[in-house]
Length: 453
Image 1: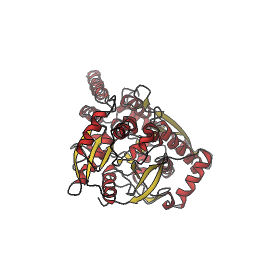
Image 2: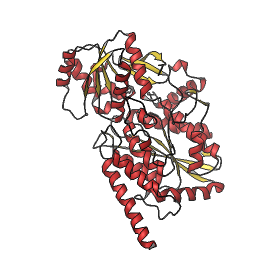
Image 3: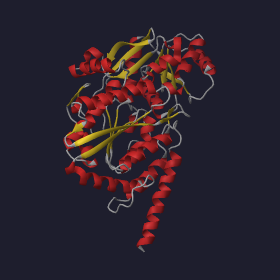
């Protein structure tokens, strides 16, 4: 009988994970695939009391095996591995390289160059969740990265992802394994909380099959970014907005947020979606011209052909302002858009550099002296790693549960971004956004906004 129970248990897990593989294959999906959660919930329902051999296909058994081995090693020190999963292939690479460099600098600064926190040696391993075939993040690659971390007994923390759609893939997998995940850049609201008019009915619970929150982010969410965008539009006398989203979770969510805050304030009734695979955007440009808006707003990432989009819009003779969120707040967008990117407005979480605390000022000076120019999320990479290292120090043991709890307990953190905390949802308490404009091929700071949401 025990053999038959074991057989059916393994079969159930295998079928559930097979469903997860199918569901996670589309990186442009705007909602979490139901099959993903069904699979995650099924495996989570099996407690970790009777672990078997840890394999890439069996994330449930990896939970108990990893935690047990980690706890055993706690008193003896050893290695604690931190994985990052970020898009290191394609045009995201330029900005992501700065994020990774900032993480490495944080380790050096925090440990005084020793690479050790207490009795533990920190091993930082960078994983690429992008593929050359897609030119951006890839759901299958992100799934493989998450499973690699889950099944590594030395892995205690997972830093990522960069794209919100990728987080949808990995959060449930890491959640079942009890591994903490900290993102330096995800902003899609539905990853951490529900927001009427922006998120899907099953979010965010769909991503947490164990009902224990293991995901945190140091970047401010898009419901606040949408409000910041509207506040800025009003200062430049915009009345009518043409909305465009890139069909991904982040882009659609951001455009939805802008549309939500448009109500009773601006006219955002005209909208279109792109998928990043179009040969050109001439017909869309014609539709925009016919609608005669005061501003074109793009919710999406550079890698969904934002540069080509703005170029075709300008080529059609449309001269009204073009605005986007942090998804195009990178030099890669300026490079792709060329002359058409000049004058584009962008929003990004944070305050002006001269408003950062001394720690932030010191970081920027140190980073630029060693690596060169920073990008929007460089400083967030440094903050993310510091949160991770502080949690390891606070926990004092090589145990996923203890380190996760230490991260969740992050309160009044005196970081490079200022003083902040993680709330119960895993969000930062910081809500500042700044607006910049492309001027002479560079992003130039214009103003800061603290929207009321």
